[in-house]
Length: 327
Image (cartoon, rainbow, N blue to C red):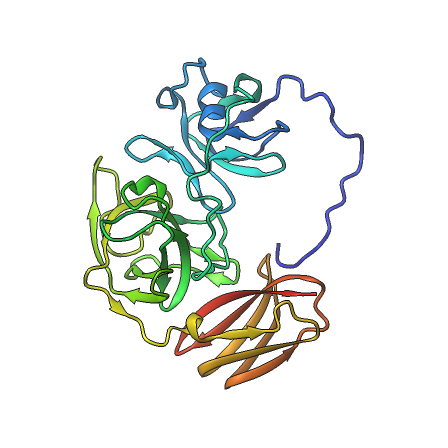
């Protein structure tokens, strides 16, 4: 959507879903999740696509992707970063050959823990991106990161993805999804250097220039330190914070907004000059944009409806995001 709108559905609701089947064509498919209960994504596709032996390797599935860029796919072994499929949500599915997905074949009591899907960053708050466009995933392991640390990817100073470390010893649990197209515009550019930053909640510091070792465990991973030019690429890295430098005066650390929730005015304060602010809604629509060039600014938000909004502040060429609410 380019703006907020309402979709009105008319007619008679479907109460009989027959065999709960969806036809999947070779290539890309957008599908609905029909059952009324959550079910483990890997179980649904392994049992619902084929001979019910539970082995996805025998099927024609390339990947399943959710709206946040999380995958069910083969990265040297089938990895489920989606967790459970959820009622009312749509999914992006790529097939190497046509097939039929039968939801009734999967166990409705089966539940999978979403790997990293519900752990939203609190420091590197990411605006979101388009999961249908090109997407690149980095799986992260580390000897000296801890659970709860956050890692973000940048392209020319713009954040293009972020994640929370769940288990630093198991890379497939720490998926950093990086978007070619953001909610507000362009994301990463193929061929540009990958820039990673780490935030530690223990020190409340942002660290730059981590030492990164790219691994290729199965001959299929992307091992260059630049953004790829093709979709469906992934990397597996070891990230070391031993030689990290502390980023001084990081934009997000400096910016304060108050009151939060706001009534009619939102005060924005920073230790350094903010060159630009933008306020967007959660679907990426730009509602307010100001070139301010000051460290203290008040914006009128009384025309905004009650809800959650995102303030984007640009300091020293870097743009960071903060969420705030309007009563």
